[in-house]
Image (cartoon, one colour):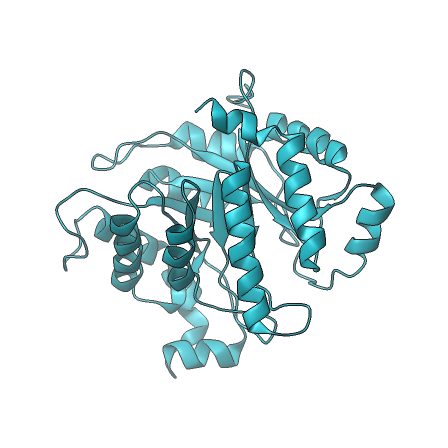
Length: 313
C-alpha cells in the first residue's frame, strides 16, 4: 500500500458538518430550516471547517435545494465554508450547476464548496425532474457531467458560466466506494469518501492509491490532492444517552459509525484518520432533537479543540 503516512501527524484533525436538512421533530419544514441555520451559525462560531448541505427528496426533508440555502448560510456566517454536498448531478444541467456555484463563490469568495454526487431518488421524483425520457440510464451520464461541470467552473465550457475574475468554488467529488476516486484524481478535484452509506467500501486504498497516487492538478485551478472521510453517528455525554438517542434513528440507508461520548468520538475518529491518511472528517450527527444536536456539536468542538485550532490560523 502506498502513502500510509498519517496526514495529521503534526496537527489537529479538522471537523466539518453534514446536514441532511431534515424537517423538525414536529414535521415542520420551517422548524427544520431554522435548525439548519442555527446549527451552521454555531458551527461557524465553534471552529468547524465546512458546513455541507445534502440534497434529498422526500416528505421528511425541509428543502431539496442545498444550492439555494448555501448563500443564505454563507451570508449569516463569517468564515466557515458552505456548499451543497452533494448535488445529484445526473438530474441536472452541468452548466446550471456550475453557474449556481460560481455565483455563490463570487458573493462569498474563498468560502464555497461544490459537492457532486451520483445519488438516487424515487422513480416518481426522477421522472418529475428529468421528464419521460430514458431516466433509468441517467447514472451512466454522471462521469461526463462531472467533466462538464469542471470545464464550466474552469471557464472552458462551450457556454460562459463565469466572469473573468478567476473566482471558483472548491469542487468535491463524493463517493462511497472506488468508482469516483479515479475520476476525482484525473480531474484534479478534492475527494470525500463516505463511510456511513450502507454498503460503503471502507478501504483506505481508495484514498491512498486510487486517489492520491493518481492525482493530477488542474492546469487552471492548480491545487493539491485533498481528501476527507465522512462518518455518521450520535454524540452525547454518556454512552447510554448516545445509545438512547441513536435508537430513534430510522434511515435504513445510513450506517452509524460512532455512538458514544466525545472521548469515544475523538479516539475513534483519530484512529480512522490514521487508517485513511486524512486530516479532515465530515460528521453527520444524527440527534433528532435540536438541543441534543446542539450539545453534540459543542462537545465535539471541545473534544477536538476546534476553537484552539481556529485561533492558530
